[in-house]
Length: 190
Image (cartoon, one colour):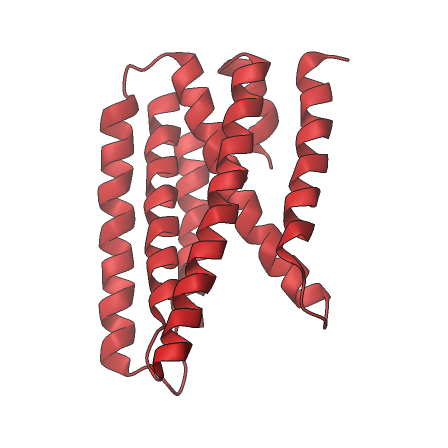
């Protein structure tokens, strides 16, 4: 959340940021449905034990986006890159801890955690290389898209923990729409 005012002040016009944030929200929403679909297919096929395909693929895509965010932050200059790297490192630590379960072997945990680490590093380097020298508008759009992805994950986790009943996926989308309206008003100076 600390990045949003910074992105708006220094990087891109409001409409670009709003569009990129909306696309990031929709991307994560679609990723959630895709992961749930894969998990459902695994259940129908009777695949048990280990880490589910949907969760695994969604996690790797999320970590790739996180790495790209870090690269975008370093390309933006200033303190953005280190702040993102530290914040996302903490997220990855908890992600690694979340992999531990009775159904997952120690070998699988080490392989997946190592794969996630390599993915975030490669995508950070790729993000920095692709965005180094890019315009403020492009970097701002990348950061706004990424901020939506990060915020989506945090929001999903908090909504799941806050309610005993299963949340409907539309709840998160409505929350993001409200946030986007609020941020749009702030960016446009209305």
